Length: 235
Image (cartoon, rainbow, N blue to C red; front, side, top):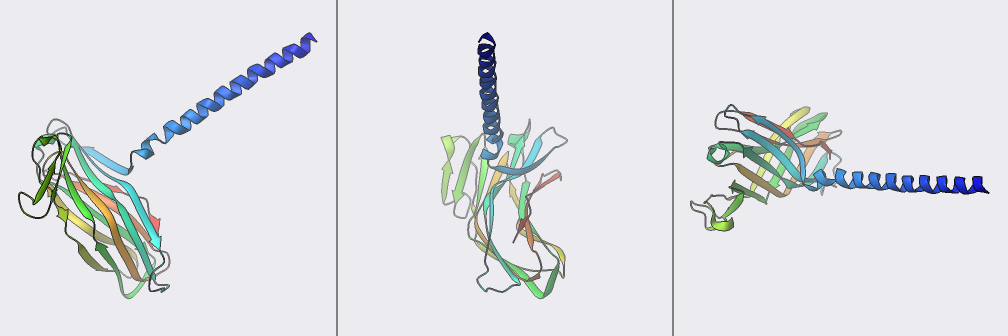
């Protein structure tokens, strides 16, 4: 009888340990998803000669491939939302001048017929500037902009919406084609973000698997360059 009770006590202790271990595992899973919730999908950085850290990142990326409206087996169609951002931190970050932000795609495919193209429509590109942890968004053209939203009235920065644009790029016979959307958008200060909403793209004349990869590029006034590449997405 005593032996049976002893086994029961051991079994209860082991059960408590198993429950505790399971609790630790669940906690680890919850903590592990914390970074993903921040919205940053990929990033890269460098430290320049002045000691400032320059980071370029992409986040909230959503590239959705959809059936092409023309139903052609040589066509692909997609929509893209997200953002590309530059952040400068360090002793001289607030005084940074002439930093450039670029954004675009690399498009890969085995073969393209003569006349193959990619067409892009960009109806929703916004540009935000950052200063002393506050952002100001300017709506409309001109300096100052037609409408300025300045958080906490600390400093004044100028931003604008990038006008709606339509692009057509010829595809090379095969390989990888670079497709720049925003090139060398200049800003002053410690940071800027390019908001991407509803970019519509269509590829025609490509044979075989088509894959798209977004990239973001930052270049400082001193000529330092840092790039980050998103995950390839099959179309």
